[in-house]
Image (tube, helix red, strand yellow):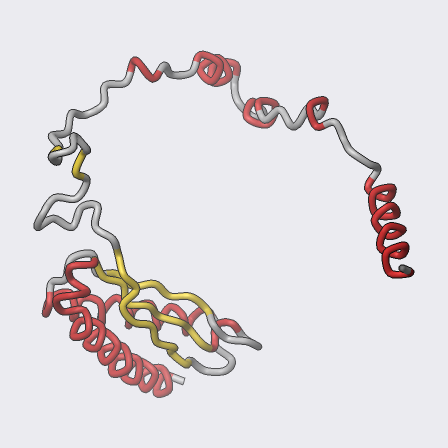
Length: 184
């Protein structure tokens, strides 16, 4: 019984602290036009006010397939347009514990070079990579690199492509690190 009273008391306390129900229909919001016009000349402000009518723009015409039910077929066979992408593999690359932006620049060159090697050997559709910081104390000390492929390429030769990509990263980063150490 006491718990029920305490619960009701705290609920009433919370409602009173929030100020009860607010009428959001009277809330005016922010007028962004004031921000857009600052720093513009009178002619530029006039152009902004005139705007562009959507009916004045001619969109390109596309041929599309229609299935038996009359629905548009978005993905055509043998094409990577509209294809889903798959993060096929991910690997952590450990840099120096005191890594700085120059170390990231070296890693970026290595990633680009490894990407070119894997791209030339397997020619996968939709192949790309992503890089994000994953270190705890120094975010640049550990980088998470993902190998991303189009769905058909991931099924056909995704493992081989990503394996080659990550092998090249390790090999080339070791060479670049040795060069950097010799220069210092």
